[in-house]
Image (cartoon, rainbow, N blue to C red; front, side):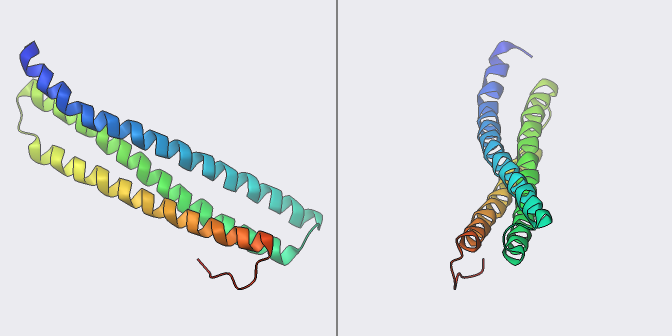
Length: 148
């Protein structure tokens, strides 16, 4: 492959690379939230075991934290899959260019899959945000809080 044919491939590959960077920042945010959920769960478990505080409220918060951890885990899996699909897209672009293969359909499918998993990840992430508000309402003992 000569240099003149490589330049357009590099230009096309920049988009997925930027997407990987953005997904990486989302993953950082999600894993930080996941860590906070795990830390808070451990604190509440210690309170329940020690018999300090209101057991019923702590157990309700633990249930919410368990749900949030599952939502965040799914969001992280989907975001990771999105980054993996974007990286595969870059590889497919280069292999297609080097081997003079027609990869447009495959790359298009990877792009759609990448965006679909990213959208799914964001849906689960937003669902976690919704559940966190319910946990805060329990913590603050706010009555008549709508269930998320």
